Image (tube, rainbow, N blue to C red):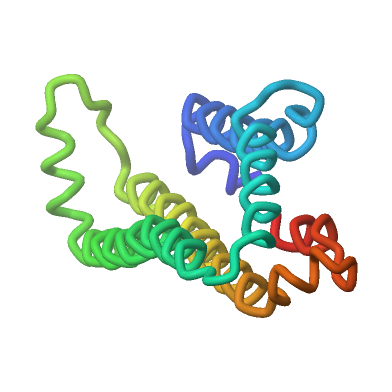
Length: 172
């Protein structure tokens, strides 16, 4: 019960709303949007069509370049997350000065030092989570590149020896 008294009720409410929205959006993006025309559903259809087209091409250099190009965005955000985490840990070392600086902002509420540090730690947790998600995304691009590289030649699909839909489903 003493832990609950550390933060003001408005901060607890903000934390609950933030994480509730986060979990709600994650659920909707994964399950709730399956029956609607969402960006995720449309992207999945295009990804599937791309992989079907890949089974028709023999030199798959274009597909490798597309995969490499797509993987640069999560690599950028992953490295940016690491820089932000470092900055937040540096901020934890100077919380007194940072709290004073924030306190000088006219519309900012005065915040106890412990609450300020807790807020920074919540941000650290969010960016650590983001780093691992972006790193996992980069790993998934590696899996797609391996699938593209391991696809049999187009003649194998044309002869019926290999199934185009099977390979497109694995990569999509």
